View 1 (cartoon, rainbow, N blue to C red):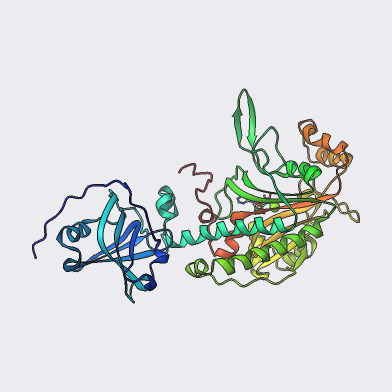
View 2 (spheres, protein in one colour; view 1 turned 90 degrees about the vertical axis):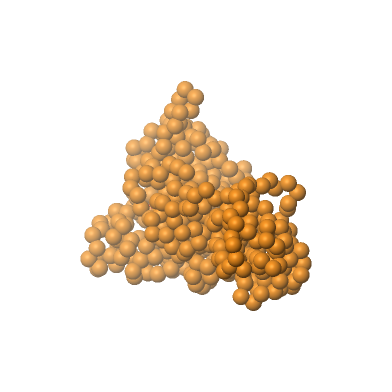
Length: 446
Ligand code: ATP
Ligand code: MG
């Protein structure tokens, strides 16, 4: 058969509207008229029959064009479509065992909305791509990969679960400023910015604001960005991450440990229930963890590490090597409690029985820290004392300290890193793939 090459042009949407997503094209629609839209993921041309796969947010649709069914003009047009172009197809559904969801679309009309002018520099429809930077440079296209869509669907679901859980527990969601005048805590480096004629900073944690807000709302949570100028590129640090921050009054660290572990189990159950398909795409089998999570004190783990000949002294934070060792001994979720007071921020409450230790905890998953929390100091004199010890300029914190003249009750809370938490049950090993547009030392775009 002689083949004429038609020159394709881009068409407007006009009154074309999608009637079905790929997930809805099933045998029960047999003979129904549908209008589907998406991107061309593959074309197979067998002479008198051409198959086009259209990908949309839910999956794939097979469009099967036969010369004797759709006529020469449409048939030639279909053969000329380029992969990755965005198109719409009007046609009839036909049962077809070998097609996705057991049905295909027989085309009657097609519109090409946008012709792909370039081939992406990586395989858009493959599971893995060796070089993450090539993908990140073209993130919007990269995110169309099935694995990543599964991750971000699960992320969305996780956020729903968190809001549902904390709502039921009587928490109110708040939003605190992200532009601040002074550091929230020592340690993590801040990003300075111009604020009119002054210097300001991007917030590294909503800590002080959430503590203040318990004075009005008692139980608060925030889901918001934290910014940290992390000195090195690692698989678990971003310069901009999302923190799930929880704070409540008339409780101590043991109460929020209990709350946090129940929240983790609630989320995992929720995701298993609602996102089983996505979990399957990720080939990551997760089991509901059982409660309570194991608790180890800092002192216990120092002993354990020393027995394993690890280099660590009492008072040190665990090094990457120490954490790897811990992760090889303790799997799954567990808490490290009662840290040395010197290793935790100024607002952390020392233990009454031993001031060298504080009422604090980290939630771990193997070698990965996913949350830190504590009982907070609620007395102004104690707070001032700790701030001075840590070399902080107390005047800069006047806006915060003044609240403590008005009856701040005992309170406690935690910050859970959303991206790190997602790594624990999606199987994603590089934190960059749990966030849409990762920021790190070397990357500021897209
Ligand atoms: P790390 O020691 O691993 O750098 P951190 O102890 O400095 O973390 P916290 O200040 O305790 O972090 O913050 C609470 C939580 O916020 C952490 O447990 C983690 O889940 C998350 N988090 C902190 N910094 C980052 C970051 N740079 N990228 C991603 N998540 C982070
Ligand atoms: Mg921490």
